[in-house]
Image (tube, rainbow, N blue to C red; front, top):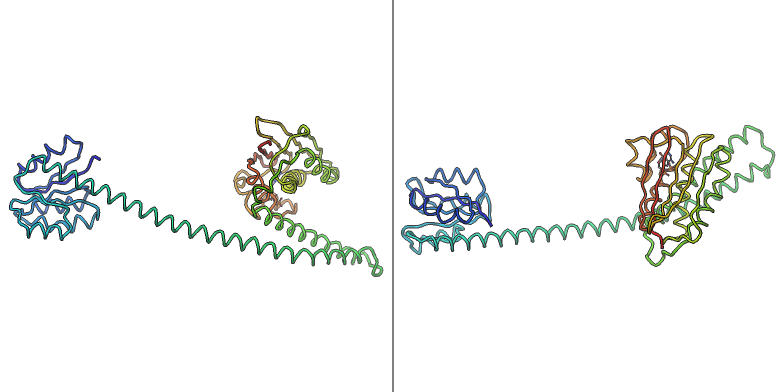
Length: 378
Ligand code: ADP
C-alpha cells in the first residue's frame, strides 16, 4: 500500500533520512518543520501515518496526536524522540500514538515501525468496513422483513376487499336486469335510460374489482410447482374468440399469425390468458374505428416472440415508462373517454416476470403501439 506520510521535525537530517527511506517504497512524503506548520498540514490534508518529533522549539509533538486522531481515528502517529524515556512513551501511547522510535535510528528501524503501523491501519480500516457492512446487512434484513409484512397485508387486504365487493355488485346487477326486462312492472323511457346508466357504472365497478383481484393474484407469486408447460396456441385462440365481437363492432381488422401447434411455455393457463387478454384487449380498445390490430408470433432460438401491434392512439413518449405502474393511465387515454383501470399492464408485467419472460413497448402517439413479448419455450 502506498501511503501518504507526514514528517514533522525541525531537524533537516531527520526529514532527509525519512525521505530517503520512505520515498523509494512508493510512499508520498510531506514535511513540516515546526509544531505550527505540522498542525496546519494535519488540518488541511489526510495522512495515513504521521512521524512527529517529540520536542520542537514551538511545541511538543505529543500534543498534536489528538488533532491527528480527530481527523481520522484510524491514522497512525509515531513519535520520534531523542531521549526515549518510559514516561514519555507511556504518555504518547496513552494519547493514542501507535509507537515511538529513538534517535538516532537506522532506516531499517524506521521502515519496520512504519510498515507495522501501516499494516495496523489497513486492518483497522478493514474492520471498520466490515462493521459497516454488517450494520447495513442488519438494516437491510429489517427493511426486507418489513416489506414482506406489508406485502402480505396488501395481498390479504386486497383479497378481502375484492371478495366482499364482488358479490354485492353481482347482486345489484341481477336486480337491475329484473327491472330493465320489465319483470317488476312497466318502465318509462326516462327510467330505462337512468337504469342503463346505473348498469354501465356497475360494469365499470366490476371491471375494477376483477382487475384488483387479478393483480392481487398476480402479485402473490405462484409457487414454482404451479407453473406447467402450457400450449400457447389454444390460449391465444381463446382470447381472439373472446374479443372478436368487440373488434367487429369497431370495424377493427384482426390480422393474426398464430404459433405452430405444440409450442409450450412454462406458465399457468390462467396467467397466460390474462397476459394475452390484456394486450389484445387494450389494442382493440385503444384503436379507433377502421383500424388494425396485428398479432404475430415467431420462434427465436429458445424463445417464443409474440407481438401485438395496433394503429391506435399511441402512448405519449414521456409517459411510456409509467404504463407498467399500478393504476397508471396515459393522459390521452383518459382524455379519449375510453374506460380503464390502469391495472391491466401491471398484471401483465407481474405475470411475465414470474414466467421468466420479458416485455417491451414501442409507441408513437397518434400512430400506434406495439408490445413485444418474449417467453422461454419449454
Ligand atoms: P387500462 O385499464 O387503463 O387500459 P392498462 O394497465 O392496461 O390500463 O394500461 C395502462 C395505460 O397504458 C392505459 O391507460 C393507456 O394509457 C396505455 N395503453 C396500454 N395499452 C395501450 C395501447 N394498445 N394503445 C395505447 N395506449 C395503451
